[in-house]
Image (cartoon, rainbow, N blue to C red; front, side, top):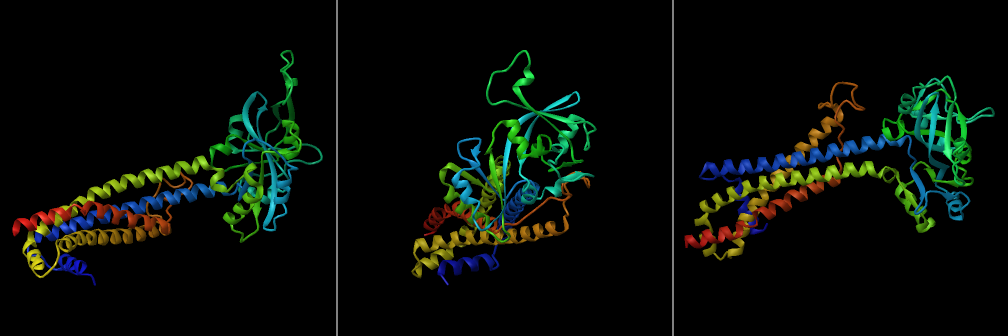
Length: 410
C-alpha cells in the first residue's frame, strides 16, 4: 500500500477534531454523487430514445442498403452488384427505385416519393407489422397496379384507407421539352388502386410522403429501365451486420456506399447523438463546479493537519509526498461520490426500465408511456473517467496550497 494513499485514507475515514471538515467532505461527496447520478441517468435516457427511434425504422428499413456514392441511380446489371448477390450470408435482396411524383385523387394533389420494390421486398422487411386496414399487401396483379400509401398521406388526399376511386401518379419525362399546349404529354402517367391497407411507421418522413409501388411500374414512370436507386439486403439470421458491411464494402469499392440502419437515417440519429453530447458537456460543467467543494474541504484539512505534515517531514517524507497525501484525499472523495452516484443511477435506470415509474404524459399520448432508458457499459466508463479527470484537475492546485501552508508553519 502506497504511503500517500494510506495517510489520505486515514484522514478521510478517521474522526476529525473539527466536525465542520466532516460536513464539508460529506457535501463534496454528495455533490459528486448527484452529478454522477445525473450523468448516467441522462445518458441512459438518450440511449433509450435512440433505441426507440431505431425500432420505429426497423420494420421499414433493411439491415443493409447499397447506394451509389456519386449518382442517384445505378445499373442493376453492374458486375460488382451481381457479385454481391452471390454472398452466402445474404438471405433476401430487392432492388428499389425512389423518385418524386405527383399523386392526385379527385380534386386533391400532393407531391410524394414513390418507392418501387420487387416482389421479394415483402420478405426483406417486416412491412406487414406496419399495415393497417382490412386488405392485404399487394402491389400488382394481372388486372392493375396497386399502391400502398402512408397513413398521413391518406389524410392529405382525403381518400381514406380504401379509396372509392383510382389514384393517378405523374412523373416528368427524362427527355424532351414541356408541351405548353398539352402539358400532360410531358409526364409519364399511371393509375393505381389501394389494396385496402396503408402503412404506419410513426414517422412523418414515411407516413406523409411515401407510396409503395411495384418496381416495374416505377421503371415505367421514371423511364429508367434496368436502373435502381438502391439494393436493399436482408442477412441470414446470426450474421454480423458490421462484418457483412465491411466485406460488401470491400467487394464494391469506392463506387458504392453500404449503409446500416443508423446510416440510412443519419440525420435523425445525428440529432440524438448531438443532444446527448451537449447534455454530457453541460452536466460535466456542473460536475466541475461540484468539485470546487473538494478544494474547500482540503484547505481546511491542510490547516488542521499542519503539525502532522511537519512531523512527517521530519521523519523523512518529501514535500511532494505530503502534497500527494492531500491530492489523493481529494481523488478519494471524488471516487466515492462517483461510484455511489453510478450505483444509484444504474439501480434507478434498471427500475425505470422494468417498471416505468416516470411517465411521458397521459397514457396513449406517445408511442411509449414511460421514459425509455438503456444503460451502455461504455457510458459507465465515460462517466467514471470524466469524474476522475475533472476531480483530479480541480484538486491539482491543492499541491502548491499545501506547500505554502507548511512553509508558513515552519
